[in-house]
Image (cartoon, one colour):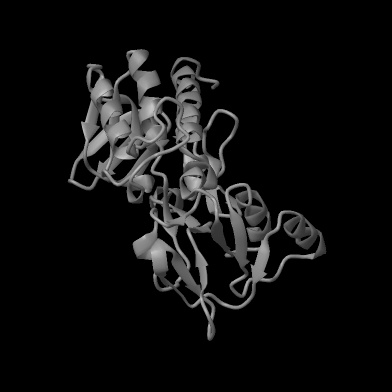
Length: 300
């Protein structure tokens, strides 16, 4: 049986999209591997009415609610390939299956690629963080660090200064220009030149950021914007148009969420760039509504 839509990725964008289509009584299959981007964080913050809950618990509630709709099917399997075209797509799954659908929504999210610095991976989502809006309040003020990866780090550090006393580790990235330096000075951001060689545990639960010989800089948390890579080979295999952003390439979509391949939509981080749970969920809702309309009106 041909589905109305296959949703590849069961995170916040994908499940929000599925809810809209399920309530329109459309047949939907959700493919998911159970590895959301925020799995490294113990709790989610800043999502209205869910502040402080584990992200995994919110997703589990969403799956339970969606399971009550008889037109929704969950498959715990990855999407290996996307074949066909609008109104006649086929998704080949990692468990050897094949599902046919009129439309496909890609919502796999990102996989974060941290700078190659010892000590970062094991602290990711705990004291090495990416989003001050998600985790900055819980740091509780005091000394915090920002690790530069691109020239955008100066702007990021100026924002993070609302959550603590910031040291910007330039990490061999070109130092800020005069205009940015003036903003950083006004925001009381200190610069620490040199390449960061390691992040280790310091006294009293602090992080020790090492920048070569000398005394490490102690901070309560270190913010970094990792390179984000789309967690799917489908964009490459189907030669989708991409859009460059400071965090990496995202999928080029039109105002309806449709990619450069007609009938294939994208929602969440991979269509938005820097985002959080609330933005990803809202984008999933919006894109699903336009996808639904396209099933009715051939010109959409």
